[in-house]
Length: 82
Image (tube, rainbow, N blue to C red; front, side):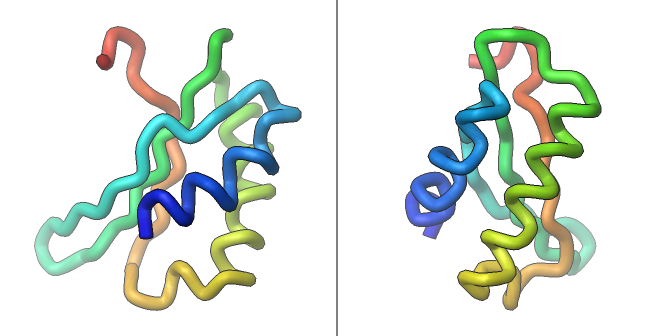
């Protein structure tokens, strides 16, 4: 499922100079989270994350990819991460 999500999203956010670095699931205290980590060759600020979220949310909904999760977390890759 992670690869499917990446394929669906990458093409749609390339105009924002962003790409999907990683897609992974996590669970803490019974809360299931789908994490979509974005990266870029330039600095990612909150405005770009917001713009990406506006693109990604409808894709996730249209493809029924959020049915089994409680939280969708779209965030940037931390500087210095491999």
